[in-house]
Length: 60
Image (cartoon, rainbow, N blue to C red; front, side, top):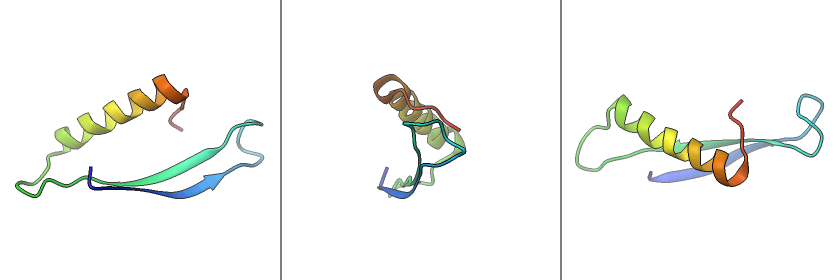
């Protein structure tokens, strides 16, 4: 992962009270080779798993 940027936070009628929706932009880069979909998907799955376990986050 080269860069992560929070670009949106939403709290409103479409989200449960006391919760919020956050959106991030993630840049994946390998300076030596082109990343495959499988490589990026594997990294993304690990990120989502950690967010679920540590923060109880839910992918919408």
